[in-house]
Amino acid sequence: MAIELKKVSFSYPNGFEAVHEVDLRIEEGEKVAIVGQNGAGKTTTVKLMNGLNLPSSGDVLVDGINTKDKTCAFMSKYVGYVFQNPDDQIFNSSVRKELEYMPKYTKMDTKEMNRRVERAVELTGIQKYIDSNPFDIPYPIRKFVTIASIIVSDPKYFIFDEPTAGQDLHGMKQLGYLIDELQKEGKAIITITHDMEFAVNNFTRVVAMAHKQVIKDGTREDTFWDLDVIRESRIKQPVIAELAHDLGVDGNVLFCDELVAKL
Ligand SMILES: Nc1ncnc2c1ncn2[C@@H]1O[C@H](COP(=O)(O)OP(=O)(O)O)[C@@H](O)[C@H]1O
Ligand SMILES: [Mg+2]
Image (cartoon, rainbow, N blue to C red; front, side, top):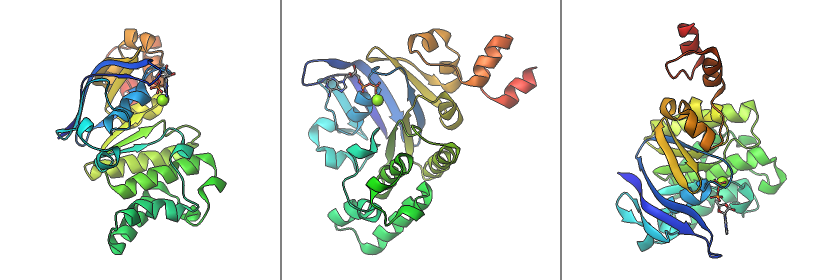
């Protein structure tokens, strides 16, 4: 079972092509970070995975289902997309209503709804805000509300678009925790991020995008030590890699203990 992009191109209604002939396959249960400079086509690509964008050419299959054959609402049972900007996603007047919206809409059993909401609230650490208006709470917390509402819908594949934006150390730890917990449940986690420390610490596979295409798809070691890719996708190596590079240490080091062992 997997998400498969097969030679997918996508143009916006104004004719601008944002993604060009991308091939990408993400298996069930994987943890994948997508990196690359602004405008590379990352958000456009992940929105192709749940039918928010439909390919202009090529096909996207989710567990064998072609996104062209189904509605976005149907696909979101498989692939949950957390928007880059929480305000594009939230529309209810309290956090609880936001989290209960999908279960109520689908007439889910109340006990099951309560179980899912409780779990989502625990994973995202938003207990304190459950009765608040989402628009009255700080931006980073609002981001956790959008993550919680996707957790409630219980998809198999999660997509987080820039989840670290505005997060402090506590928020970063919460994100690491919920990613671990979701992966233990067998979920795939796909994230777009500008934060290479977040990428290296939480994701084992790193896909680099530049100029509408995937220019590298490999393990975190492969991608973060491909200096041509680093340059072309305008990202930085994670700090330990950069330090190892400056010190002339070889062996694709990414973590502190590895570096210490080499010195
Ligand atoms: N609705 C849109 N209409 C036209 N062009 C768009 C639209 N959304 C994004 N783009 C353009 O598509 C390109 C890729 O955007 P995006 O996928 O958001 O990149 P990234 O997430 O990597 O920053 C950018 O040049 C952006 O300006
Ligand atoms: Mg983006």
